[in-house]
Amino acid sequence: MNILLTGGTGYIGSHVATALISAGHQVVCFDNLANSDAAVIDRLAAITGTAVPLVVGDIRDGDALRGAMADHDVEAVIHFAGLKAVGESVAEPMKYYDNNVRGTLSLVQAMADCGVKTMVFSSSATVYGQPQYLPLDENHPTAATNPYGRTKLMIEEMLADIAASDPEWRIATLRYFNPVGAHDSGLIGENPNGIPNNLMPFISRVAAGRLNELSVFGSDYDTPDGTGVRDYIHVVDLADGHVAALDAIVQAAPGLSTWNLGTGQGYSVLDMVRAFERVNGVRIPYRLAPRRDGDVASCYASPERAAQELGWTAQRDLDAMCASSWSFERTLAMRNTG
Ligand code: NAD
Ligand code: UFG
Image 1 (spheres, rainbow, N blue to C red):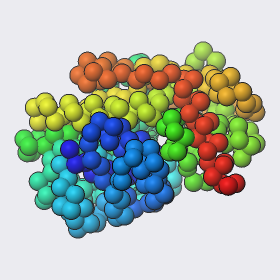
Image 2 (image 1 turned 180 degrees about the vertical axis):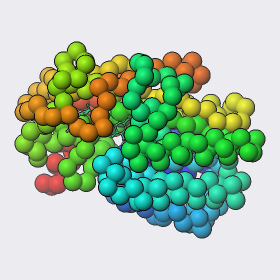
Image 3 (image 1 turned 30 degrees about the vertical axis):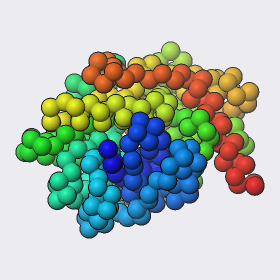
C-alpha cells in the first residue's frame, strides 16, 4: 500500500517507516518538523535502501494534506503527528487542543475528501488514567489526568463517531505503553530537544555525561522497590505492531478497533537504571527525589488482545532496549563531535 505517515520523521514514525518498507509498503512522510529533523529522511534511505518522500507541512493545513494524498496515491494514513509533553500541555492547553485535536479533525476531513478511509492512530496508555486494576486491558475505563491525555481521549471519541457514521472507515487506535530504544543501525532513535522528560533518554544522557545525575521521582510507591513501575516496549516491536494492525484492519470488516501495544511486563525506575548499567558497562549516578505530580505507581498492559487478534507480541527484552538506546546515544555523540 501507499501509506502517509503524519509525524513520520519523529521518533516512532521513523521506526514505523522502516518496518512498513520491510513489509513491502511505500511510505510518504508528512511532518512540520516541529520536533524532528529532515535529516531523518537520509537515515531512512540509508537503512532501507529506499528513497522516502518528505512533505513538509502541517496537519492543520487541509490543502497540503489533500495535495500530498493525491500526489502519492495514498491508500492509508498512520497518524503520529502531535505534541506529547505532559507538563507543557498543562501550561499551554490551547496549543495542545489546536495541534492535536484540530489537527486530527483537519486530517480526517482531508482523508474523507480524498476517499482515504483507512487510518491507524497513535494513542497512549495515558487514556487509562489512574489504574483501577492491573494489568490494563482495553476495557479498563478511560479518564485523562492532563490536557495531553484529554486530547488523546477526545481524538479517540471523534474517531469512534466517524467510524459509526460511515461504514467505509477502517480505524485502529493503538494505545502505546512506554516506547524506548532505537533501531539496530543506531541511525534513528529518540533525541528530544532540551532536557528529556522521559526516563530512558534521561538515563542515556547521564551515561554520556551530558547530564550529571538522574532524579528518581518517588521512592515510596506501593511497588517492590518503591519506585514507579512501567511497561517499557522496544520501539522496533512497537513498529511491528503497526504493520500488524494495518494488515488486520485492511483484512477485517470495517469499523474501529483498539489495541494495547505493550509487553505486559512492568519494570521499576531502579530496574531500568541497573539494567542500563549492567548491559552497557556504564554508571548512572542517581538520587531519590520527591514524586512527580500526576505520576501513577504502576502501569502495565495486558497485551492479550493484540496477541490474539493481530498475532503480534513484543519480542525484544529489556537488555535490547538498553543496548540500543546507548548505541543511539553514542552515534549522536559521534555525529556532534565529527
Ligand atoms: P515525536 O515528537 O518524535 O514525533 C511527532 C512528530 O509529529 C514530530 O516529527 C513533529 O514534528 C510532528 N508534528 C507535530 N505536530 C505536527 C503538526 N501539526 N503537523 C505536522 N507534523 C507535526 O513523538 P513520538 O514519540 O514519535 O510520538 C508519536 C505519537 O505517538 C504522538 O502522537 C504521541 O502523542 C504518541 N505517543 C508517544 C508516546 C511516547 O512515549 N513516545 C507514548 C504514547 C503515545
Ligand atoms: N522518571 C524518573 N526520573 C526522570 C524521568 C522519569 O524517575 O527523570 C520516572 C517516572 O516518575 C516514572 C517512570 O520514570 O515512574 C517513567 O516516566 P516517563 O516520563 O518516561 O514515562 P511516563 O510513564 O510518565 O509517560 C510516558 C509518556 C506519556 C505516555 C505514557 C504512557 O511520557 O506521554 O508514557 O504511554 F502517555
